[in-house]
Length: 213
Image (tube, rainbow, N blue to C red; front, side, top):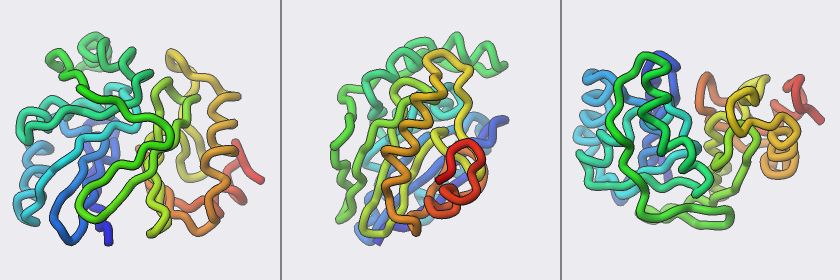
């Protein structure tokens, strides 16, 4: 059974997730840790629980979601796994970091890409990848069908949706991603968002003013 630990990191309060199961293998999703205290909070939890990080995953490569990528890469000898379309943002991360007052070294590039339909395995667990552009090119969500949850990055929020006024943002494309990729899931699927509280598919169908059914 997958256990989920999440942290709120950096000035944008990004939700950084650690998923792990009884084997102690874990995946780290969207490490937003920037300050040394944030890096320590994440690594201390991993050490305390005796976890073995085996994957670094990004839902998308906006700067607030990748600030801790290089730290994770170096500490655990991992490279990020992203959708290929996210390279646009990864390769310009130093510039984007500077725009928001962050200092970041050149991003470590992936040696493999993930795409719709991929199954990411760790321990005895699996995550299914779907491609959900609209907020940003390269946006993906990670679904666990057995425990009925989905990690969505900035595609969908509780009673809201991701911004579409950034480069490659497209409002109609985002709505299409939500309706045709997320809202086809059962209502009781828990939605873990990139910012803010968790929600559910059924709740958003009824209460999300941007995209309700």
